[in-house]
Image (cartoon, rainbow, N blue to C red):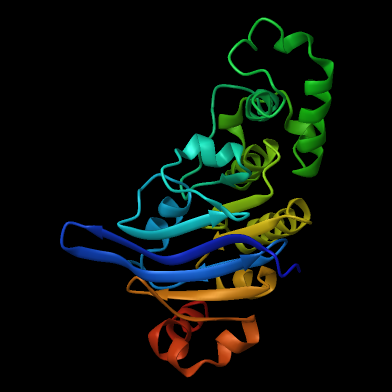
Length: 254
């Protein structure tokens, strides 16, 4: 794990009217680090993701991606700078094939911009790149199926494929295993581990088994403030974290 920052948050704050949602979050996530952000419902995790990805402007504070200030950048500009995000709700094109979903995600990264429709079907290298991603996410055999007929876990795998297709080196996953059975969760965790090798992973996740199995470091967000950051064993042993969140979260899984 590199000590060079991939993502740095500097005293980040977000108010909605008089409501303070994010209250001065500072965080430094290294290149190739797998970092989990955990906390109770309403802690501000999704808001924090939206601030990082440019969906919400911060009230104050800074976000840096590989040292570049993201102030004023639109989400698509941040994506082109190397940061890609999935959402809590599966976000795919259900009537398009699995292959077409991934190929669409590759178009911008492959330089087609706005003139791709006339030539995309003749671009063999684009098809090859799409097939490589399908192999990575174990969906080669589902290649020609409409994405909407995939199982829930397969749809989430497809969304992860779409997320990595643009070549981003910072991947943000929002509740990647939400609503899954144990076997589906194991499938997605193995997939995440495989496709994020050499990349920076930032994830929000409620399943503590997933968090402790994947994360190099964990940050605990409570009422818009990070109360602890550290290695999994440090966070698990932190009395403040146990009191605020972790004890109840672990108990709920048994």
